[in-house]
Image (cartoon, rainbow, N blue to C red; front, side, top):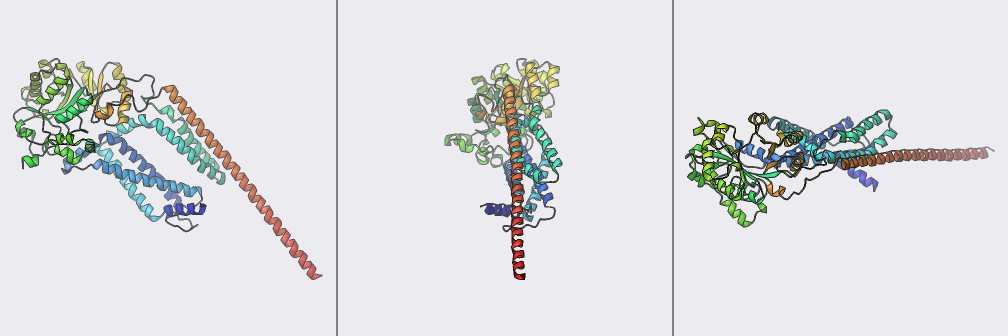
Length: 538
């Protein structure tokens, strides 16, 4: 049975099914290279999974360049997961080779794949750092959510690997180096919770953040359509978040994409108005925009892989959505007592307040009759002009210094722009903090523990059912888990060390006993031969 296992390990790692005791040159160097690439691949996969919260930003960015919708981020994730799994399994087989004292002869095909994997990960990390550098802050934040679990995982890995370390220690001449290295690594793992600072390790859990529907509920319906906002309202959102632009006839309408080809991604402008798909927002009247289908793209591209969860009736409704005006959304918000926050697109192109998007938007809001305190005014251009016309609007800021200078108390910022400590400090000062765009449970849980007032999200249908964060521990309880896990790991490692030493002594005694037996047999044989020779001589 053992020989079969050895054959399998040898075949997978070196592609030699027969026993081959020859040792390749630089085999240890290749094993070190395998270890490095495995760690890099696992780290890159972790980054991809953490950054998945913002994957639609990547897909939309690529769409602007290629004008073709493909879930590029999912492709990157699948490739990174396959690569990380391959490297990790190969590393495990390498360690097992080491444990059963088989030569570490890595096959040339594995070497080629490892080099390709290294290049792939390096290109991915370089591109990530150049085009999406702010996402590294998200990775840093993720450790506040995952660090306690990573610590437990590291303890398990350290305990398992200690068997190999102790086995090598008892049979190696470099005992001091091996033990000192292992002790340093073990100490770092055992004491790393001292450096863990997570807002979810607290005795006082803040209230659950309110939900703001980002372009409505774009996982359940086409973004910035009336169906999308209705779906978000069913999730219990306190506010609609949208994007406002001004049409050729000076009517505010809802559309996120702006500039040239702004209608290309979410409408059938190519079909309805051939040759006009490159036009700016000022080249279409509201009536022409109403002629466009704003839902078919959602069913065709399935940007969140959620279309399969819709009923046939919901799919038909989604397929019939049009570009809504701001007035339509204001009617819904007024009827259901929901607030409204929005970005104004192309505001910098205006030539004065009375010709600006702010003016036409403010005019439309006032005409709707909605309560002024339900408008969270975010655009910074012409803020003071708008305040003079409608002082009841809630002024929302995206820069802390600007808010403080203006005497405001409402921030709207990207979730990674503020540290969890900053969020807690602002809440203590009675500053409302809305963070965008939060789509993953781990991130929502972390911001909940930090004290965020509200979050803008695509996933309101998921967060509405959360009655508590994914995890939350009191400091004393966490300390108990930490100490218990460290003690159990220490005892297991100490037991393995003694067992390895005992096994080595037993093996040594058996070898000595076998030597003595062989020597006695040899002496008896020699005595018999000597006696026989003597008899023959006589």
